[in-house]
Structure formats: C-alpha cells, structure tokens
Length: 111
Length: 112
Image (cartoon, rainbow over all chains, first blue to last red):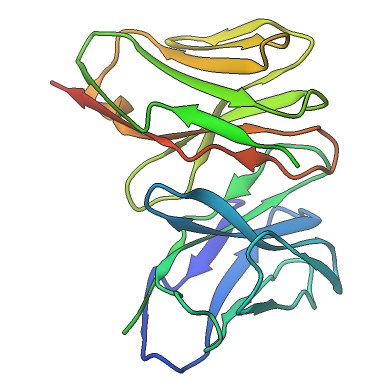
C-alpha cells in the first residue's frame, strides 16, 4: 500500500537534546510538509519542500531544521532551541496541486 | 496572507441529528476548499473538497457549500453517527502549488 510512514509514534526526550522525527513516503510525491499540532491551534506549517535538495521555512520554523536528500524522505530535527517542543507532529505530501496526504503523526514529549 | 476562521470549536450532537461547521476566509483569490477529518491519534484525512466554480457538493451524508461573495463555506453532516466523532478541519488555498491555510478545527462529538 502506498502511504506516508511516520516513526516512531511516540517519542520522549530530555530537555536540551536534539531529536529527529522520521517521515517516509512511497507515493512518488514531489512535495513534502511538516506541521505542528497543538490543542486548539490547528495545523501550523513548520517547513516544506517542493523538490529534492530544496526546502523553505513555514510559519513557525524557529528551532527546527530539515533535509531533503531523497524524494521519499523528509526528516525533521527538533533542536534544543525550540522553546516548546512538546506537540503532535504531522508530515504530509502531495503531487502537483492534489490535496495533502497526511501521515499518522509522531507525538513528541520533552521533559 | 490567508486567514481562515472556523466555528464552533466544539460541537456536541445526538446521533441522527445534523451537524454544521462553518469557515470564513480572507483572501478572495482562494479557490480551493478541502475538509479533513482527524480521528484520535491519527493524521487528517480528506473527506470532501470544493472548488470556487461550484456552489455545493455532496457525498452521501456529507455536503459542502461555498458562498464566494461572503467568503464563507460550510460542512454539513446529516444523520450523524458515533463514528463521525472526530476533529474536522477546513482549509483554503489559491490552488496550484499554494499551501492551504487551515482553520483551528472543530471537535465533533456524536452521542449515541
């Protein structure tokens, strides 16, 4: 089955540590996105990539970094500079102007 | 940029009742309006969408209406069932490679 795989589903880290969230898709989509979801806040765009080796900041990029070395993969690193990293993180992809297709998310807890 | 307002934030109905979720948008150039359903612990899934050249679209128990003049669009769910309980998001986009702007979501609770 084609889809987006986010791993792990739950992730726990100590404050001050960087952590990388995985996002892999086998849909052959060119564009990939990272969103952060907090209760009552909706979906806020962190970073996106329209093509391999290129990515742009979204609305809340501070404290995050990404890479896009392969079409299938778009990992997100939450750095120690992110002040409130505990959240539900969603990865999405799409082909051309089709609707976004989402993964099932990673819940990150930083204590 | 685009701003999407979504109401209500929580909606509680009895099974069999209808549910309506409303969204407004600010950018008159927006022409594509998808709706997503997010079940607990999962990612949002597209349930219906509408483009600006259409005023209404139906798919079984769900329908979406669009009023371009007033810049608002609504999701209607008839004969609600407990499995309709979820968070629903509206979004607006100018189409093409533009990234949609999402509303803050509506938590729909359907009581058996």
